[in-house]
Length: 504
Image (cartoon, rainbow, N blue to C red; front, side, top):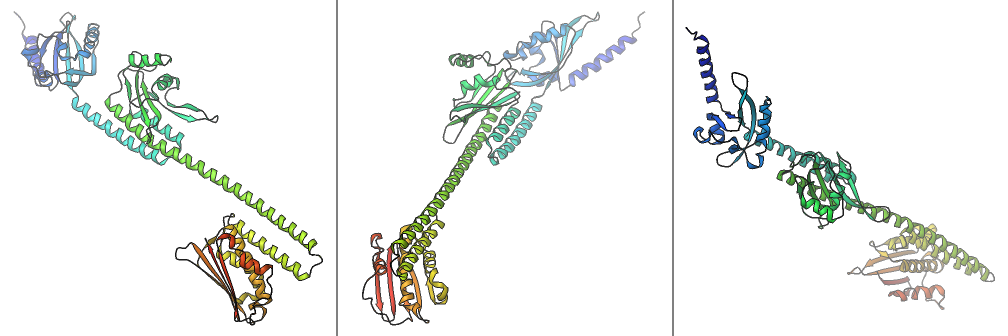
């Protein structure tokens, strides 16, 4: 007699387990120790596209892309050692050749004696999950790129900009370390390559950067230690082999608006094959932002240098003008001292007249120094020349005219002419009595290339033309002859009228 209780329970358990396997969305596969598929559920069929009768009896490598065939011996080796492999993420291949992302859990299968006879695999399609993760990574990276573009576009400090660029490039490209190199002019006037690094010393990238720095293309290598293009380029350039820490390598040039290579962004990883097309696009985008930021920073520095140079030039000009002003005053003081010695036997009036003319000339020079010797405003010239006569005749002047400027020589001559006219008005004209008035008016020609100034006296005693022409009269008539100007003086009975027409 045989007790069938345990057998009945085992059959029910097996049926229940079979139902679970059959209805599972995951692919559940078993294989022997030679890697031959021995069972295949409906979930595996939905994932890989094979029916059970198509795939059972075939090697499991049918599901593995050729570039990953080396994974299977490692998996079987671990199974033979009794290990369980949990959630191993890899790439597998469907019947139609498309590649899918898979999470594998692999467990050893034992017989009744506990001997390992095969393995069971639970395959979960994580392509959709990976797609969502990739989308989230892209969104995160785009947000990071957006933030870095805002940061570097508003910061005109080159050092801070470069630091922000390399830190961001290293992070969003998924690199372990990175570097930014560029040419900078040192104190000696020579160009030197400058490195800013993140996560590694400069020597990790130095040889590679030297090799690719002047290139205008993106460089990517899954393993620089075995890449013939990279190693060959280094040998031709007489540079040493890449640093042993560096395997995956990605480099993008930073090209300015003029087409000049301003520098390069380099990122690396100790593992091989880390960087992909997405990382390339990210690095190219960061390099474009970096180029704009570097152009802006360099332009800002040039502007700062130009402003500083102009400031120094203005300071030097101011110093020179002050020195000239000092020397002119010393010269005029010397002239006055010599004149006093020369005119010691002359009348007091003659000496006073000469001193007054020198003082008027000095006053005109003072006015020019206020305008950095470039010239003076007509109104300022008139007011300064008439100042000596205002003290007792302040209400007897009429001055009017539009804004206009005279160059230095014409300003000096105009000032001296007005002084002589004022002196004559005090002696013989409108200011020689208590009722006379002087009007000084000027206007610009229609083309604004000539100035017409008129001195008109009225209310003074009747005017008689002078019987002889002294220094003052000759200067009034001839002062502007060498400057393209024209003068006319009329001794009308009602008062002197003097017209001055000069080019601006």
